[in-house]
Length: 271
Image (cartoon, rainbow, N blue to C red; front, side, top):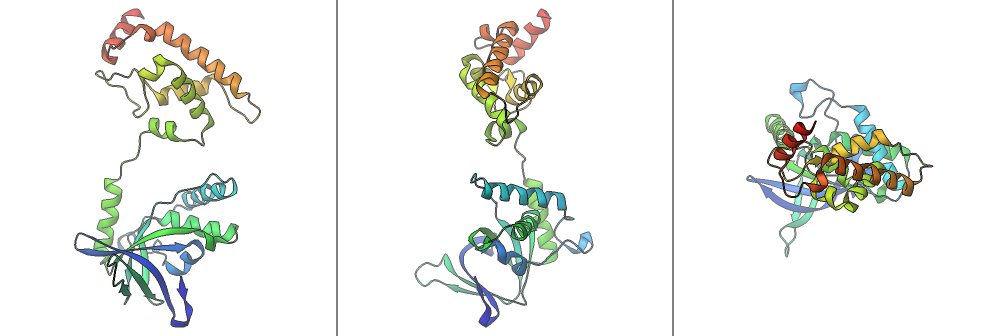
């Protein structure tokens, strides 16, 4: 929300606290971001709190959002996290002290230390689509942090981030037709369902699972190629037969509760 008569940005906000700092959370419209946020990726690395902008990554994010809007599949954007330098005013609700209104003067400077590619991607979306005032993104702001603090928080966020394993990503990715087809085949096969690890790529000796879902997807990609004209029922049937045959050949169907370590030793002797 922009109050032009007073030359301020004014937003309803959620008021929180982290480590002795007040943290203000607002919801900003897509088409306001370029005016609300300042670029912080052009100066020397040690004089900013963001990495060098990867335009390709920002464009890929823009395409993700546009596809979600055009195809009605939706999209999800994690909060943009940054700092506001300036004389802001927070009007705290009399009855609900965790809520209020945040007034940001036009001469204040807001820079991000997490989410720069999402921000630039959103700006690209606004250049390609109309009515982006109907779409919003959450912005989480600290106040008047030093450059050293912003850089430390950048390092903390990225240093503590844990990228999900490729196996669980494939299992959850509904936009990947092959992985979802393999998932259906696995879930329809009682042996595979019980012996497939959907969360990890590497199977250890003590694991009850014997094969990673990612391995099944990678192998299935060699057996078949999905196109718009593919008959999914036929492809699914073919994959089901292939993996059922593999279960029989490898002895997986007769494995019972053997852990992977014992199975791999038996398979080595067989070979």
